[in-house]
Amino acid sequence: MSPADLLHFEKARPMLVGLAYRLLGSRADAEDAVQDTFLKWQAADRQTIEAPAAWLTTTCTRRCLDLLSNAHRARVDYVGAWLPEPIPTPAVSDTEGGTLLADSLSTAFLLMLERLSPRERAAYLLHEIFDTSYAEIAAMLGIKEPACRKLVSRARGNLKITEARHAPPRERQQALLEAFRLAITEGATSQLAALLSAEIRLSADGGGKVPTIPEPLHGQADVLAFLTNRLHDYWADYQWLEADINGLRGIVLQQRGSVTAAVTFGYDPDGGVTDIFIVRNPDKLALLEPLTPATS
Image 1 (cartoon, rainbow, N blue to C red):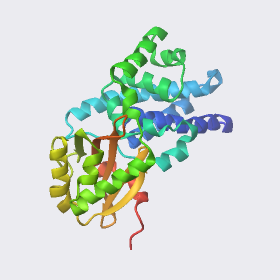
Image 2: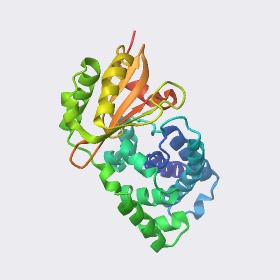
Image 3: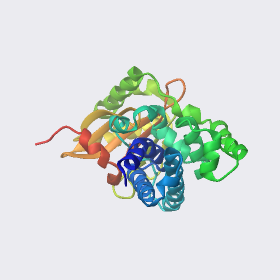
Image 4: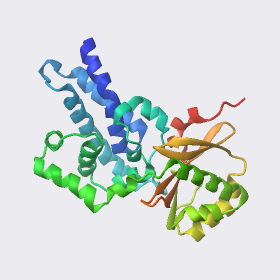
């Protein structure tokens, strides 16, 4: 492979990783999809490829769609709630450069995408997040342009997906972290209750590997009781670290030098907290390890 061909791929890599992660909800799977794309790029007759970036995006997208179909089948047997793999936003920002839109990395946004068909998801992300034309997307997906426009319109309108991309001011996010910590560590819930939507939902992903709640909790009464009664005891010895996770302020918890949980939040357009997401599946926490303070 010539240096020029390698440069084409390296220039495209950040966008490919960002697209693949948003499609698959897993950084490890995203890296696999991008690696598969690189291998196909190596094997291709690159002299016949007029638009390398478009070729690479098409190849990566199609590989992700294959992986996405397999992932949906696997999630049927997933134990408990499935949540996307949390990722440290600064690390993603460094690799994605100008393509990073923090609100399209939020846990709430990625879960909203789960409600779309694979093609709807790909079309929406390519057009709305990565600014790809309808004609280019149609060619990538092997469909006609009107059908492509319909896919994007359905994703944008029927699911009200823009609401899931709402990010409140950083000061409000920070106030939430402090109120959340106060509720769990001291049992004082007044500040947190004032920030929560009446229909607040708490979901936890243990993947069947660590104990957690089997079903999401709904409503302030049940959620606050869980935080103050159960998590107060379970998390008593945890170390707390605030961090930017999936584009928003979140919390990483560790015990004896290892990450044990990550907490992120979803918001409504008025800044009210609609969701609390807790990931405890150890397979999904590896990327957060570098965020933790050094231990002796």
